[in-house]
Length: 236
Image (cartoon, rainbow, N blue to C red; front, side, top):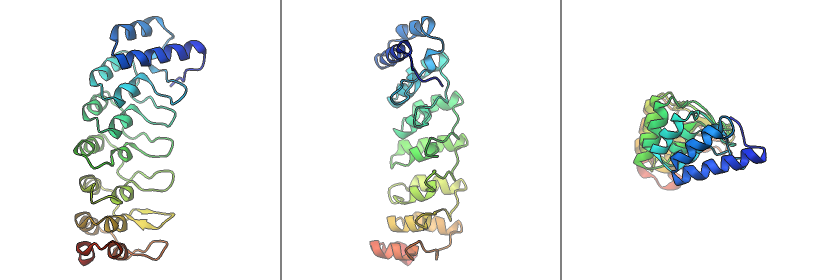
């Protein structure tokens, strides 16, 4: 999507974003009809934010619908490769994410770090869990791995004690129970054991995880549980 570069493009893009913030629909329509072609999809040059990104980030469901009706592309990305759906998921904006999903937003897109939308859902709130459910229903990859080699499941399991529902959701949708971060050798099971979530540890093991895989420091999941004093995990 076009990034504003000329003085005119930058001025009109900033004006559009200002009108989105103010929810000034008549002025937005005027700008889009008489301004530079395809203004609705232009992004400002600093962060690459478009009107759709802004409305999604602030959870203005009505404005998101309005902007889409004016021709905004649901898969436009900012300079970090983030879609509007990623911004909505990041803040747990369920209703806005539903609007974007209905508009056929691509839930398989990855940002410049190789992270898909599910990476943006790993927060311990019911809203983020609902977002995760929704994007999985729309083909998000539960085995996504970032460019740094971090698998989605391993990252979620580092705080499995707070993210149990999302970890369970990933495992229920074929996330690899033997996911491992190659630079550290730490597995999803080790991460969950370190977090103290006996529930997720049980699920990962039942899904086929090897309980004796050691990381680059020679530590097994049992070592991790013992270090943190997680007796229930260690006993299991």
